Length: 245
Image (tube, rainbow, N blue to C red; front, side, top):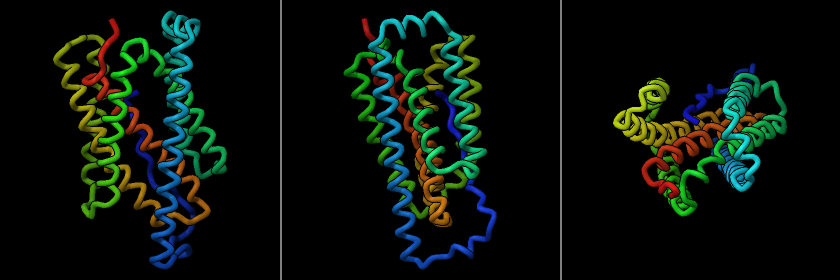
């Protein structure tokens, strides 16, 4: 899925000064939120992996999916609806509802990604996953600990992402091998950068998030990093994936 939802900081309807904590409390809250973000993201990836493997092993499901293109587009539209719903209405939802929607999204994405197990060998998929996990982990750690303001990265990467989507759509019709390689390289670089930027953004939001909204932020943060990971994985798979005979 070539999209990444840029989520603005939630609006709390009250001045942050009402929630001011001591520096130690702020650090503890931020650490707690980030742990919840990574835990939810990890569970989301597990849901996607298991659903994808299960669907890939179902001959009837794969036949239905491959012979009915509308079904794939239906999954894609459902994912967009969930992403935009979480972005626009998360503060009106309970934390449990937002979390449930995130895992529903992860399950639908697993259904959509099932065909990769028919295209690439299991060994190359596993290899690419570990390469992606290492790259993602390194950039997320950088984004969390760096003192450099990555705001300018975000602005540049957002427009680069729009260009990537447009180029991908164009290449559906042109089917240019050279453009496909350029898109793949650009995709890797963009989502490597977005991983660091999103991590820093989530950390900054955690610093000013009241405890009552920590669960909401954890879900939004998990979704952002989940999308970064999945997209990075899919672009890396173009380089490291070995197609089946």
